[in-house]
Length: 215
Picture (cartoon, rainbow, N blue to C red):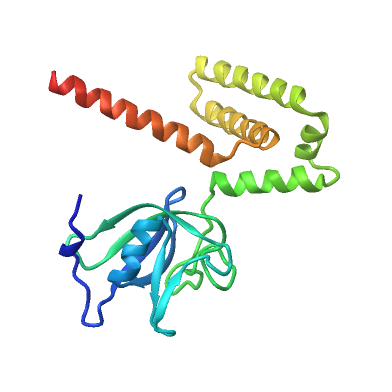
C-alpha cells in the first residue's frame, strides 16, 4: 500500500482526483483534494474535495444526497494525480447529469450501452407499466412467467451453442440477459448485487491460486 506522504501536492497543496464509476469505468468528474480532504475521504470512505471557488472542504453528497462511496484510490506513476473509483448514489454533476463530461470537443460522443442503464429502464417499466410494452406484460404476469421465459431462453442458448452458430448464440444470450435482468428487477436484485458476488468469487479464486503457488 502506498504511503500517502509520497504523493506530490502542488504549490497550493492540491492534487487532482479523477473520479471514475467503478461499475462502468466512466469518468464522472475531475476534482481536487488537499491533505485534509484526502484524509477525510479515506476515513469516511466517501469522496471529499477541496473547493477552489469556495475555499473550503466539500463532502460530495452532503447536501444533495449524491454520495460517492470509494472503492479504491490509486496514484499515477508520478504520484501527482489520483484515480478514485466510486459507487455513486446519484448524478455526479451539479447540473444533474451522470457525468460532468458532456460537451464533445473532438469526435462524436456515443452513449455506451450499460447494464445499469437497461436495469433502470426495466425498473421504470415495472413502476409505470406502460401499455403495449412486452416488459409490462412480463411484470403483470408475475414471477412464474418471468422464470419460464428465463428457462426458455436458456434452452435457446444451448441449442444455438450446440449448433456452433456464433451469431445466433450471441442473439440468444442477449435475450437471456434481458430476461434475467427482468427477473432481477422483479426480485429486487441489483446489478451491483451480482457484481459484488462475482467480485467475492474472484477474490477467493485469487487467494486459492496464491496459496497453491506457495505450497
